[in-house]
Image 1 (cartoon, rainbow, N blue to C red):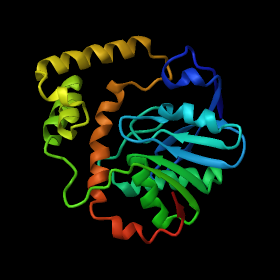
Image 2 (image 1 turned 180 degrees about the horizontal axis):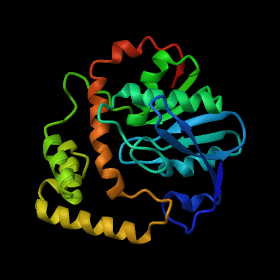
Image 3 (image 1 turned 60 degrees about the horizontal axis):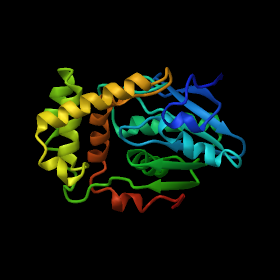
Length: 241
């Protein structure tokens, strides 16, 4: 396990003076890295889409006087290995099973697509006793917008990251209403400038939007996989908040 002092006060690390890193090997041999903060009973905090372990360091620090918080990087970012071509939510569950085994954790927290992974994991992993689930994007009756994904994937493949992020933002309607009237070319220029500014300030441990952009494909795939899973999730025996 390595101890890291962040090189500069960037992004979420600004609130954290020191943290440790470690890793586990998932069932398929992929390395899953994590950050570790605090002392006390183990809790695993799993990030969502367009995020990394770094994204929740401030939350971890707030809990550090009572818990040992483990913040894994999901595949494709940060300290962890790449996605598989045949990746599925079960691969994510296997990754978390390896981390649960190493840390001895029984309590978990998940945000967005990270929350979906914990819901799926809680169906089959008895080690999970308590789960805090925050805003899992569970689609109901085709409510998940996916029409934009083909364009997004093509733009990612062509290296047009700003264009892909704009496609995702407009496709999911995550931006403010004014984005609907701003010309797409202007949105792409603004996104390019924003990424450049972020990269200029980023430290060696930071995970930037440009790095995260390709991972969004797998978050939508994950949400699509759990279409209609609400009834199945009623079978979870862990305490869920």
